[in-house]
Length: 307
Image 1 (tube, one colour):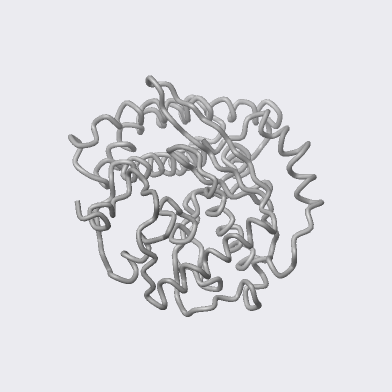
Image 2: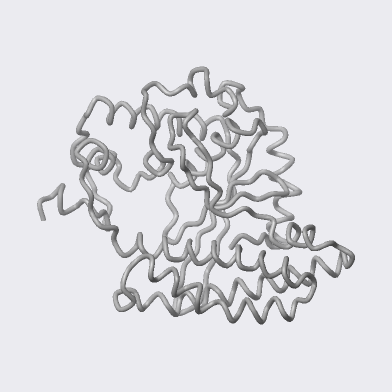
């Protein structure tokens, strides 16, 4: 999921990167200006990026129920599945890096050990999210996902070595797997959690990568925008691009769509305005009431509608 195809790279180098470097971002909306309005938090609170960016409940009443009323409800199956697939991909990347460090350019040994570890990878993740019998339908999808990742990894490995056969091991890992997964970052300067976890960060050019195992929504770009602001607040370099990777399964076939966004002033301001709105709701304990339309799989429906 984290590998950019030749088509993706062409889109980046010919269009998105030049566009991002020409893009005029207001200094007030760069994360490194976290101590000044409008980025300065208006309340002494810490919310997660998903608390702000997840708008499956249009009114944000799910956040009110969690943060103000302290309600806890179990995650639904869609949430468990997403967590499961995220975990699998994270474990795969980490395992692949370890094996390249261990075996270097010996692709045959790397692949043999990687394939041997796939069973362990998805069983470890299943143990984390629930009993096997309730999620057994995910196993086949996990196998499809890991098989695709192994093929993509092998192709990239061979492609890199064909172009640069004398790479050292550390450089080889960086060129083949140029992402940091589950990067833990402190968002407290922006009124966010100290323990945020970004799906992936692309190393060649600062790009936030966010995985989605579901249908496309307009508000999905808000999440990586929040992470971009946090990276800027911590490290002082500009982050202008994000990529949302949509993954789905149809008849045991994997479908992947990469949706690139320029992290514009409009997206930055939209995230900050939503942060301030939700902070106020929590701080002043304002119940926003029921939305006109509830998300079909919202785990709070039993509370809101008394089912």
